Length: 109
Image 1: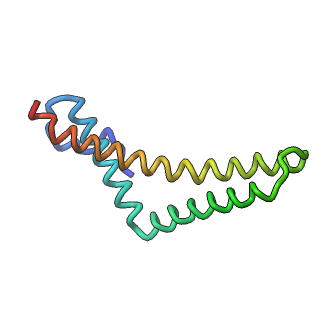
Image 2: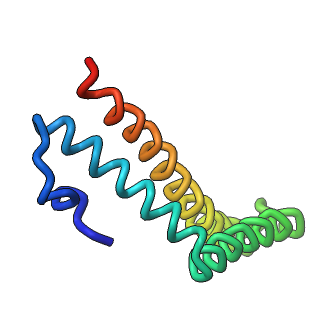
Image 3: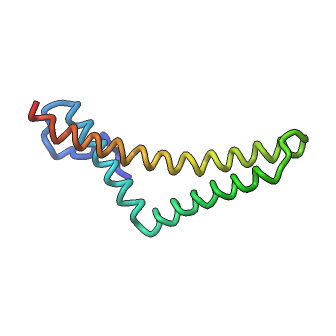
């Protein structure tokens, strides 16, 4: 992915705020495009599968035994990774859409 500070370097912005909105909007679009690609759909689907598997594994352990505590911690780490991948992608798209709206209205103010 391109450096967001370099996105639109050939465009003349009225100030740094406008450049930032543009960069955020571009990142959101790139993440959206990625998630609609074969690789993006695979990784998103895999993250959802891992999350579901972790939920199911939690039901089968006793977190009060020494072995159960270790397994519980492992499952939580695995779920954390899957959850955050999905969350970060979602946040990038939402923030990008918000930035695009702000950018669209920025020069009208």
